[in-house]
Amino acid sequence: MISFVSTVQGVPRDTGTASLYQRIRKVLTRDLLVTLALGQVLSLLICALGLTSKYLANDFHANTPVFQSFLNYILLFLVYTTTLAVKQGEGNLLAILMQRWWKYMILGVIDIEANYLVLRAYQYTTLSSVQLLDCFVIPVVLLLSWFFLLVRYKTVHFVGTGLCLLGIGCMVGADILLGGQQGFGEQKLFGNLLVLGGAMLYGISNVCEEFIVKNLSRVEFLGMLGLFGSFFSGIQLAIMEHKELLRVSWNWQIGLLYVGFSAFMFGLYSFMPVVMKRTSATSVNLSLLTADLYSLFCGLFLFHYKFSGLYLLSFFIIILGLVFYSSSSTYVVQDPRVYKQFRNKDNQTPYEPPPLCPRVLEPTVIYTTLSPEQGDEFPVKVA
Image 1 (tube, rainbow, N blue to C red):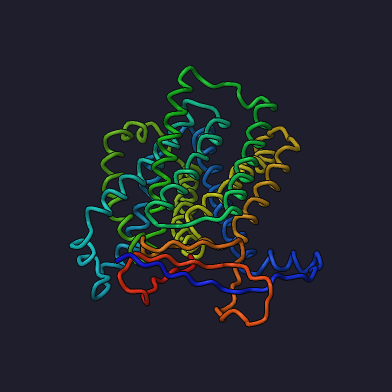
Image 2 (tube, helix red, strand yellow):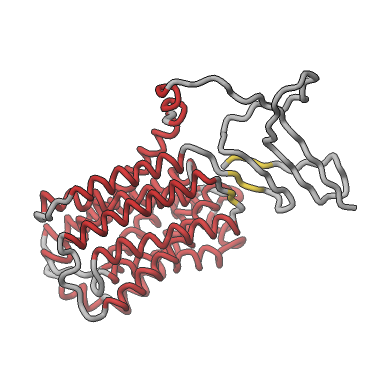
């Protein structure tokens, strides 16, 4: 038997006119500002990673992306994998390996190759192409979150995503106008394909990370990533970069840059699950779009880049898109038999029976179930 249960909540329409200040306070809540600030901390960490990598590659001719990632995985292993090893119960390292070792092995390989492809692409294509094509991670995360995490978005989320992509487009346009397209080689198509492949792998890794930190634990994710990441990146390092490491002219400056890069990368990996648990993989990737802008601003002083007003316009458009996206919550459907139709309004009042007196009613929640019992209601929680 197929039954349909509908619940209609009566809410009177708000006829009052709120002041502009009240509307701004309603949108710019404390949680929203904290979310934006946490996302910008991640962007600053990525900016620091880019600067240290640039100094290593340009000033010291040390092109070692696999070795740089290997140092980060070793730090994750020393801190988080050893933490899992001394734990008791189901959260112990051996218990986790017995239950889902092959899943973390695949995730570790995906994360390693995502880092490698994007870092290697800079040798074949331009900065503008990398910045533009790297945004491919956003639609990948949106689609994977919709189908596998059952996340449901509102119109405001798509508007915010579009604004963020428009902002990154302004930044790429400024780079082209200032001559950023000069100096690319004949293998630009190959470099662009590397970026697209890396962005796709980043999207898969980020969606898996969101699921793990929200349903299992942050320490488990980082510990298993450190275990399999250090193992497979060590094998890749021995095969692909052992000759490059021998050509590096080691001194205290290069050593300091490697230490700084490892510290920034370790901070990024440790802090990103905290932000992702609070928000989502999509929100984190939208926040990271400002990292390229921070790198350009630093380049104005460190590398004498040319300035364009489009950079500032790009920054404000991306921040505006983040405000739009973060101003409304997404919904996670926990049971595939449940579909929830909702408005762009987060603060819903509890259900009350409709009054006897006539007034304008507005439907807000409709539950549809395919179970044989009419009384069953499946939960829907806010992500």
